[in-house]
Amino acid sequence: MTQNVKYYVKELLNIALPIIMGNLGFILIGAGDVFVAGRHSTNTLAAISIATAILNCIFTFGIGLISSVSPILSNYRGERKSAKKYFYPTIRFALFLALFVTIIVLGFLPVVDMLNFDPAITPDIKEYMFITAFSSFAVYVHAALKEYLQAFEIVFVPNLVTVLCVFLNVALAWVLVFGCGPIPSIGVIGLAIAAFVVRYVMALALVIYCYMIMHFHNYEDKNYYKQMLHIGMPISAAILVEFVAFNSIAIIMGRVSGVYAAAQNLVCTLTTVSFMVPLAISNAIAVKVGFANGADNFEELKKYAKIGIFMCVGFMMCSAIVFATCPKFLVGIFTKDPLLTKIGIPIMIILAVFQVFDGLQVSLAGIFKGIKKTKIVLIANFVGYWLISIPLGYTLAFHFKFNLMGFWYGLVSAAIILCTILLSMLNVYLKRMEAAHAKN
Image: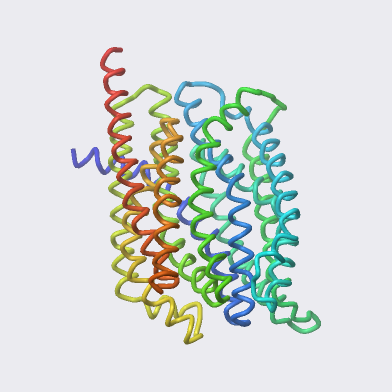
């Protein structure tokens, strides 16, 4: 049994470790923006925090749809169907989504003026969003090709590209924000331009890499698009529900004071860094469970599911200990502002509890993606975040004067309820699959 556990852990880590590297690289690009913005001014940090919160809510919809690529193609591979031929359909799908999202972001710009943010930062919010809107093509192509390659368990080079771009982003952002030699300081616009350039570099690198390792022929399959919508829409909506919940907190509190939006961005940056590890394991679970599901191998499916859950929760328990014991040090990495520090440190203790349940829910979501039962993830996220978290958080924040901390109490409550729903439904689905497998 010990040998079996080691085997499945190794198989999951073979996929997850490079993805962890890439996911950490991706979030460190965002963390680099927070670092540079925080060193420039609290207003700059507040402006990009609010702009990023709005952009995340819009961009996430397409990212969720694209995340259906790897489980669909993994199931095809398990069924011994050709999967490589879906390269061009995947690219076309990504570009269509990017065009749609770009139009939405540009159309949202006039709405920013109506949200009553601090007049000192509103122009910066709009400028950052305007430039970033046109990077959506690169964002979606990069995400689509990572998913495509992940389905074939090709994960090292795509994620290495992301890591290398961390340094490019920080260097570009620093030079453009603060100026260097003949290059003037352009503040928030510099952060947006740096992100724009880096995203296109990442996308182009993956396009070149795909052509280096594979040969493609034009292919069209309308059923593939239908499957992406069928599986991806609930995933997309579930991620959107969660992202909007998190980012609406920054928007709501940002209307009270920009410093609360900055604090929410700072805390979310820290938790997202640790979340990238179980998220990568969840991606590996989706691939392995998807392959086992396509091959109708129920025993393999159960083992990958159980061991994957153990790995995700185990890591997040270790992360929770770090967050609970070193809050001052972690917050101090990003800011020296005494007010930001005062707001951020108490939330880190609540965040430590949230971490454990966040690890459990993302591992369960990976299993549901692999077995192509994604609607329950959407339902659980909606119940947890919108029926529980936001109403409870709003009440604690404004009626009981907990401010930002009140919203985090709501998020912990949501995570507990969400995990309860997913665990109950997974047990139901596995029993049904076991009964069907026994009949065959």
